Image 1 (cartoon, rainbow, N blue to C red):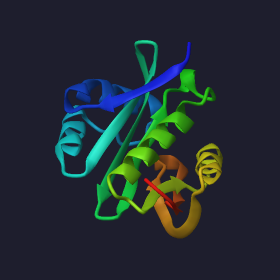
Image 2 (image 1 turned 180 degrees about the vertical axis):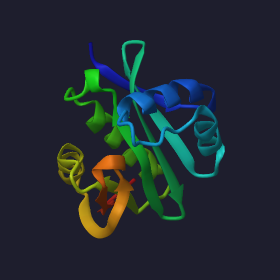
Image 3 (image 1 turned 45 degrees about the vertical axis):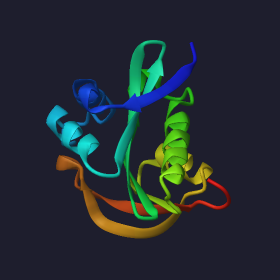
Length: 157
């Protein structure tokens, strides 16, 4: 069955919170609540996408556009649906939507040790533009540096 993407709306808040918990299930990860998803999705410039496999939600992504810059707030696919192109589809969808909303650049932060995500972002034209040492708290496993990555959009929207 192939993946599709649909818009994430405030009424999807419970689905989004559940997906987020599944995507980022390490005990030290702070889970985003349904209320937080509602607030984000109702805030100016913020929008999201759900990855669907048939009628099953398997991933989500959230971004925000302000002026000519965009930021990927989160992107994740549940473990059972990974390595099937879902993250690529979500990232491509966010990028298109950011461009349509006037973004000329898109930023994100990724854990330095998250090689799968870094490869995904690099394959989509993101480059490292900064570092935030000890940014992500891994609980008993210490802290890890966040890499700030940027992609510049070129050409027509």
